[in-house]
Image (cartoon, rainbow, N blue to C red; front, side, top):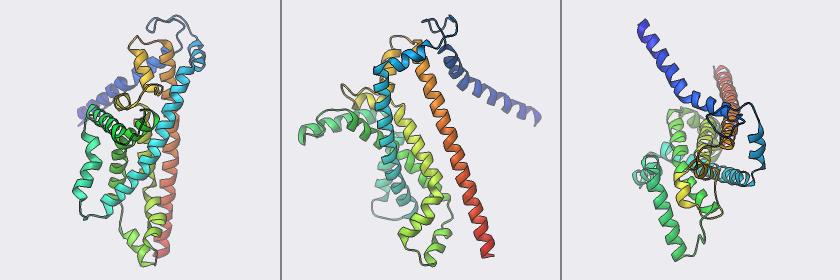
Length: 279
């Protein structure tokens, strides 16, 4: 038993080393004065100043953030609706087909999804004249289609484990269905909705394959820009950019985790108080 315990610790350590050592090494070399990424030439922050002076990178970052914010928000709304429908309405005509369409992007290769979206936009442009050109709108629609399935899965899983008697009790006390949804269901599943939004935002922010098929001239997102630069060789400014992304994502994830944990503790306290009052 003791040997198994040590073996699990070693596996955990190897996993942490495998995932995080490359990140820390990239952050370390982002302060490298030399243009050669793997040759240390002294400590310098010049690449960060050059990064903020690069208008191309700034424009690409702004575009990526705009697409990620819109697509994550729409995907969270539609995914929550789909998750509630699949979890609460167990039987309705076309449920199997609807569930299959919702979860299909989850198991479908991104290349297939990207080609399908590209063909759709081309045919729509030919027959109805929209979209006239591929860019912000087409990329956002593609990201919503792809990330919607993740939000639906998370929300549906949370609803499946939720005690439905809470909703039934609220309805027995005279609440209308929309009141139960607003005052009971949504507050309980709010951590799942936030988690789905964060996952959709992250997926949209770093997507390359689907974006590459659905974007057009003048609409270069940050991952596409990084990919085009990396093909010519990694430079310290790319290390600086990636380091900033890691720090920002880490801070946002930490803040979201703290807020969600605080909300969960508040919900548990409310539940205990309600149980005590009922007893």
